[in-house]
Image (cartoon, rainbow, N blue to C red; front, side, top):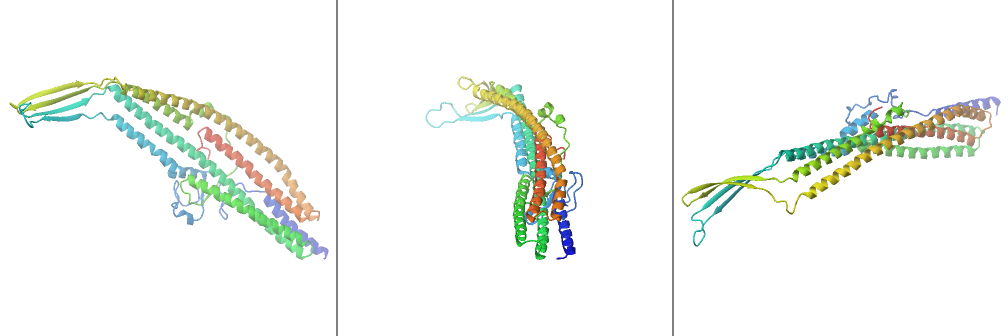
Length: 456
């Protein structure tokens, strides 16, 4: 073999290696569908789908046959707010509480009664026929009406606070699922590129083997690596599909094939400004616990008011056919609390208030602890990512230079070259994992302070 042919062959191999290693050292930060235009620098960019904001272009029944839809984080949150069955169920509790308010404002109905005395047989004891018509009305006090109404109003406020808490929990899950799908897409993209790089390397190795420069073992080793990479890519695609379904379920469209656009770059969150006691006091969970406690306190007052004696007044007329006489009737009645003193409902109301009071304190303390934990977690993962970037940034250029020089000089076998490519690929995947951990820690902090719909 002439030296010119060797030089040309080595130059072709070097070009292929440089392309493979350089591509592996630059993993994508954004995940997008193949062939799609690169997303804008802002993660808040509007989705490219023609569907209007807050809606899906297909119904869940027909979405399975459509192509993947690309959505942003902002649109995913809007879809969850408008389509989630869980949130719709929580919202349906508000009309139920409002119906209780209607019942609380209603006064008791009067009672109309009729009685008559008719002669059947024997002596006439009533000397004719008598007819009696009577109307009786319970008299609630103003305190009883106000107590029932206040308890019902507090129940409506508690139901609305529960809706806000459910919405916050749902948005936290949506944001977490969105980030996980974004990372799954990035991993699949890295492996997809690695498969193409290995396929190119396999063609180069096969060409050199035909020229007599490499053994058939090298060809077989390269083909095995390509097959292993295809298997790994299949697993990555399956994980991406699983993450997409989990997000679609949260959005109320489980049959929809979703892809997301966004960045895995860390947000510029001021941890000290977010992790404050004021953030804990305004958390939807704490607010809901406070409203439940207020409703229970109003229930105690309503139970005390309902335990009061309710008198009744009545009026009527008595008509007799004997001499065609008539008489007016009046009555005043009151229950005697000899056996049922209404102590059971009052004790129950006080016990419920004590339970909600303890639940409110637990919500406040646990929220403060969650904020502290999330802040520490984010700071730790930020430090780990910074350390990883510093160490990788320092070693990757040297690793690339050594791989290029070694293979060009004939000092590196194909196995060592494949190991170098595998190492750069693993570093790219590790970089995605470190960024994913930081993004998930950001979601945890935003959820802990009740601001999960901000910093999009």
